[in-house]
Amino acid sequence: MTTESIKSALESILFVWGDPLEAKTAAELFNLPVNDMLHILRELADDYEERRSGLRIREADKAFQLCTNPENDDYITKLVTPVKVKRLSQAALEVLAVIAYKQPVTKAQIDAVRGIKSDRVLETLMKKDLVEEKGRSNSIGRPILYGTTRNFLLTFGFESLDELPELEDIGSLVLDDDLEGLEMLREADPDQLTLPLTEE
Image 1 (tube, one colour):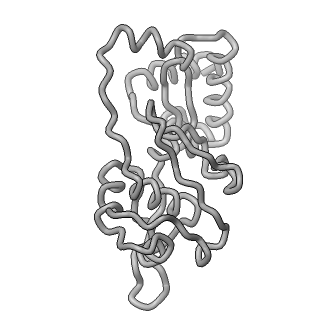
Image 2 (image 1 turned 90 degrees about the vertical axis):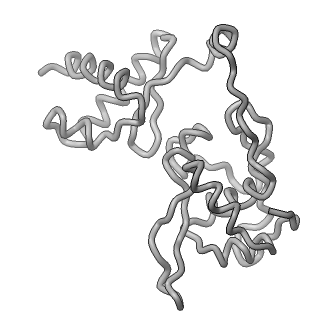
Image 3 (image 1 turned 135 degrees about the vertical axis):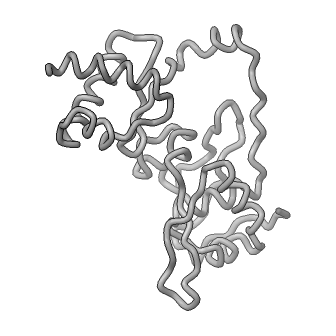
């Protein structure tokens, strides 16, 4: 099977699949090494970019998803009835910021940074598939460790956590069409981090 025929098949798969397709899953379908499949998928994504297609292939954590070209958003908005995206609360943004930069992190550590309990906020972020459990700490009581999800990367447009802005450069990050963003974390040390006290 040629590279071009594999690309053709991948386009069909990505169109039908809808959700992010892991390179490992695609590699198994074609009996190829994962690294070879990663190369083909990234090459296919470049093909879309080069011909300024109305579609794009975005990557997040070695998973690939077909999406529309952001340049065409205005036309799509005119055609479809926009669905109002509920903004994340200030508390949710604070918790998400702490987890994003300090993961894996326990709830106690999150609470210590914020100066207020984060149970309900954490539950909300998990329901929105922005945060997930990442195992348990080896400390006393083996508390649950939390980290961000692949959906977090996709929502904020990151390929990996390495693309998170440097702490000193953060003003805000856009969530969908919202102008709400992650609040700036003022120190790199989780024990020194402080954020405004807020109600959940």
